[in-house]
Image 1 (tube, rainbow over the protein chains, first blue to last red):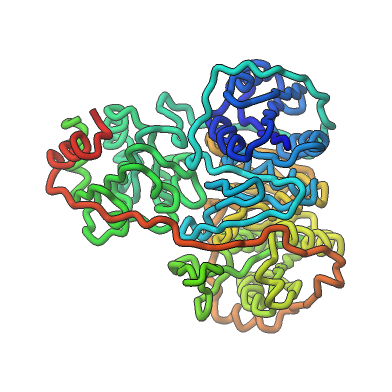
Image 2: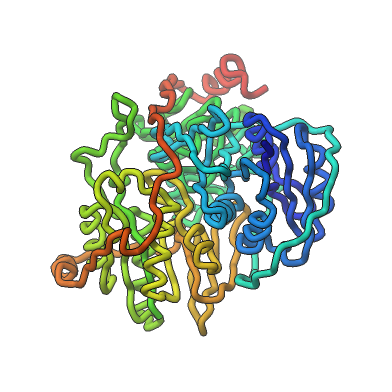
Length: 309
Length: 254
């Protein structure tokens, strides 16, 4: 039995989510191969070869993988799928975009966003915004799986797996990249941060969000997050969103500030180790999941908290 | 240009789900059902394309039991021109999985020849986030998932996608599949006159057998359980108490 893990990377470096995915793969019990497909991605491949538990690193380096489009990558993975019992990728926007396409080409189901491995064919996954957990058994010859990264620890490093270059697949030419507007930040990555400071509608404006939450996040070395309401209102860009359809986070400490706590938001953060809620409404649902709740005016409390840390 | 909009009947998003005592699933008996919110956004986008004279016809399609007609009527009330129900029996509907739906939709696409298929990025019941990508693969079409902006010009779609790092814009050859994210648009409400008009719009029914698609489930749900409940904690009086708790009790800050 061998397992293929699709690495997420930006050609130069490996994304942290790949490390959690390798840990999920290790729970299946089989030889783990990692595929790095990109353009000029030798550095990412070297990083992936260092991951503990990886037996072989497969490298597909071609110009038509520069934009990491699902169409070209799915064709490549499909062509190299023979012999693998499992194909895994992180349940990030990269993995969610790519892997169902691979599954359909292989004529198998995809098991989305697993948070537990019961056996090589049985997995646990959240449904209904995490309000229920389904245990599902696959009857397919190949199990195509996306992994909820917060449910698995990062794998170790210090390995030196052999790197094997593989032939690139076709360039289907179906899509072209027009442009990217990526948020640049010195802060930790939201999905992997130990502390997350998250703001909601209660902050009332983009200016307030930045003025109040950035100093607090600086003090805590935290990533910044937001509720859907704050993103919809334009306080912050879409990639800040925590929730059922945004990012799922599970930091050591999650501070929910001016967030009422709709179930769609709770779905994205309720596995955090410690949750703090600051809200003026004592009946806000966020308090039902918070370890520590502070009822009051966030415009007073947040600067006070920043000063006290 | 014909636009096909696949839609799904799901639990109303405001409702809290209850897991059945025998762990066989989620209790949907007597529960209010609705159009999947992401599909509602897809219908709205298609209708706007028609209002902008880019789309000529908007066809809503749903796969499932006869009751899915309700959601198709909603799509018609929102502005779709006609609807297709791929009708399964109730037992099949329970085990209809993303791959099977993608195969049924492929058969519908082969018949209808749309230039654009636009659907929700995920359904809020099983949160699978697969159908659009699978359909695109089966058709050999380009895909743009998690769309927050769609522009159609000269047989090309330019789609802005919400990705983990921010936004990415792709140009796609048509025909193509687009899946919607939350910020693509704000769907309108169906007005009473439009709800009345929707009752007279055509709704055709097809059977999976007519479409020749294999819809056998590949996954078996062994059990559905409630996640571990998080206990509500304590309310603290002020910032000083909060900081003390975080330092001494939770030990998450130094």
